[in-house]
Length: 405
Image (cartoon, rainbow, N blue to C red; front, top):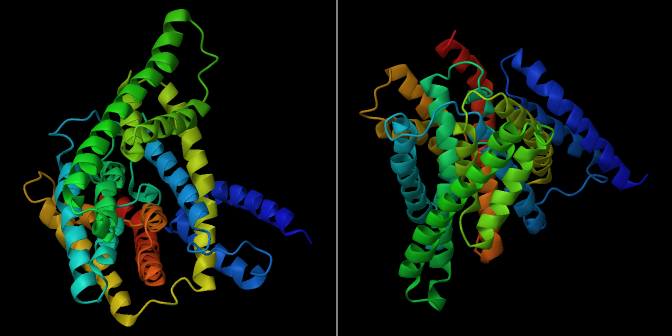
């Protein structure tokens, strides 16, 4: 039997399930990501000899590209569903999480990895960087709904905005780890990193995202209204805007993740009540679920295939503490002074979901430089994501219902 056709059939099945799982599993208050994870593990336990080998170290380039595509699609979907214009006051909570929690997280885990787990400095910095951001991909159960649906509560808005903002802002930290690893070849690596990887790439990403968002909004929202032609208003525009913005920004060495998220916010803020936003979001949301189903299925397969093989007991305990203790406490500390109810602050603090973004940053960094302890790094990050999927996947839906009955 041809393995290619088997893979095609499984892809089609995953596409079907991407429509059914969110509906069915929500009935029992379970995230659909858990369903795909279990399906992947079971499938590889039965047909491992005919399915593609889900090894992110061996398939490094493919891992980078697949996770990269999913993250940018998720960032566009995330921005399009935020029914709130940007301002420092109304975005205070997510900005605190990005500005305070992310740095605390990166510093804390890097220190633990270096002093207690015995990793080299560069590898320790990399672990802190790739696990600092929350994930826009796996956080759909705690995020706001589609555009122009129901008014978003502060918990869902804060978690949605945090996931959109920090997935791009983790890049400077990742490049810092790469710079430290390559420091022997560049004595002035810190100033080079600060100038290029922080100031230029952040500024370029923000500027390109703003311009791209304005262009898309004009040509597909404003201009059709002026000339009375509406046939070009397809949902496909959302995917095209994602790829165009990301590719163009990366051509100028800017951060494409930041550009995509900012462009989505600019598009969303243009004629806020326009029904076309719903069509854009609906299409990109379906694309996101389709790609996500494949990646979480493969992650389940990698768990069966032994990605956790190099995980030690200290690493496992560190991962549990990081997800279930450190994130809630550090995030709650970051929200001091924000005018929210205590239960809302704790909910925001607890649901710091880790996911595909961490996989991308790790695969990207390992492609840029040959870090030591590759297997251990993958085992640790995979463990953190697994703990997050299971813990948050079993509690998110029910918790959101209790917060907003």
